[in-house]
Amino acid sequence: MTLHKLIPNHIAIIMDGNGRWAKSRNQLRMVGHRAGLKAVRKTVQHASLIGIKALTLYAFSSENWKRPEQEVSSLMSLFVYALKREAKTLHKNNIRLNIIGDISRFSAQLQTMINDIQAMTLNNTGLILNIAANYGGRWDITNAIKNIVHKIDNGQMSIDAIDEEIVNSEISLHDFPAIDLVIRTGGEHRISNFLLWQIAYSEFYFTDILWPDFDRKALDEAIAVFNKRERRFGQVIDS
Ligand code: IPE
Ligand code: IPE
Ligand code: MG
Image (tube, protein in one colour):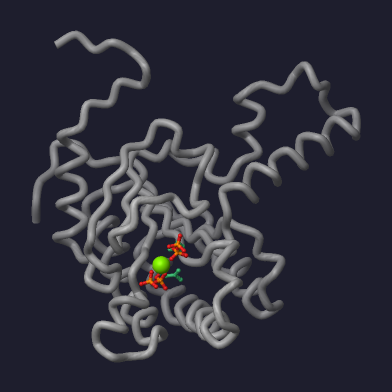
């Protein structure tokens, strides 16, 4: 195992390339998503082992509903299958599972499963595993605005009290460490409406590796590159 100087507190991953992975093998896209689930398992295991505090995985974007109905429903079934299969193992490994995104659009069965597993793992002290499902960065910010306006409407706060801290407190993941590193697999160099507010000072790492091929070595490589970056946060660092 690679020993890193610095382990990022929080890594977020855009897991892209499942479809192309399957296509290159003349298989259906769904075969790629299933192989992607295996890569999730490996990545979670390794992240937990090397002491990453939080891992946030982009599983389904608010735009992914635009895919063919067959693919969307297969992805939902895979999600249910994965939660059912992995819940106990995650709990046993002291991992806390947290879903971010608008889960109200999911089936009642899936919503119940999500709530149950979140409750079961709430007090676990190991890796925090956030799964972004029906998540969009713009949805997140819009939702924060709604909540703030609601509080003003109720007389709980005044407009003048709004500052970055208040906005932040309404945005997903605010209670976890800041995101140090965003990884995107699959060769595209874009955010695709993943976290927006949260990545103001994150480092970015893009790799051509297709998500189903992502493994321990690939995660170690991303962290090694992260270790070479100089983060300045707008300041001047004397050399
Ligand atoms: C990412 O893989 C997984 C999801 C969006 C659910 P894709 O399905 O986007 O794979 P490509 O980009 O078509 O290869
Ligand atoms: C981003 O990948 C969403 C997830 C990985 C869940 P997409 O494949 O949906 O993004 P685009 O369409 O290439 O921007
Ligand atoms: Mg894609």
